[in-house]
Image (cartoon, rainbow, N blue to C red; front, side, top):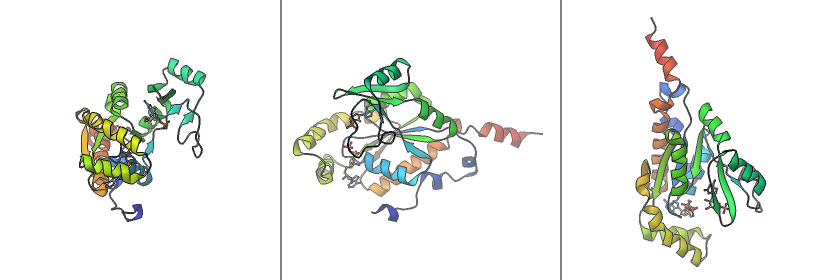
Length: 227
Ligand SMILES: Nc1ncnc2c1ncn2[C@@H]1O[C@H](COP(=O)(O)OP(=O)(O)OP(=O)(O)O)[C@@H](O)[C@H]1O
Ligand SMILES: Nc1nc2c(ncn2[C@@H]2O[C@H](COP(=O)(O)O)[C@@H](O)[C@H]2O)c(=O)[nH]1
């Protein structure tokens, strides 16, 4: 279905009660899945339709690729700057991948949390564990499952972005990735993409309304019960 024809379900439209008008703390929404299950598809829809959420932008030492934009795709830094950021404890987590360093900077995300803005992460289970250890109360973990292993293979093949060897490697890793499903707060099956997107919107709406995130409630209740 084209995005313009999507049902009008958004986290905003769901969380439209009185309490939603009160100030709230932001959250960190993590989407993980085996490669090809559809997390990028869902993430793009959320980012396109929900102004309250933005994607986390990692810092990396790898060279910029054609078409990439510094500050949008990554913050491109040299190794000395990356090491300085590690030393200064400026990352929630970092890792070396294929000889380059990647890290999730804290400062911008922390500011967004305070302002009531949400941040979206498309990361694997190891990154999820590290983020959860550092920011448990702010993290919402969602694992996306494919409806079947055969369908996962069909999607990877149909995407047309990978060679047969790369697809085989992604398929070989899929079962190990799926084995981490129980380290997540929510598990959704991406059979129909619109239904899966709608479920994730519902999760986001409910998480935004959690009492612990409704920082404006204290003053509101105090006013209600005054005199
Ligand atoms: N519910 C669905 N039904 C059919 N096709 C789907 C569905 N969801 C996603 N797809 C398609 O499956 C392919 C893989 O999806 P996507 O790239 O979003 O997966 P991913 O989990 O982000 O993979 P990776 O980890 O490799 O980036 C894409 O071609 C996408 O259009
Ligand atoms: N642990 C982290 N891994 C990250 C981060 N940002 C990206 N990545 C992973 O790096 C590889 C390569 O990415 P590429 O853009 O250079 O192809 C990929 O697996 C990413 O998931 C991060 O902040 N932390």
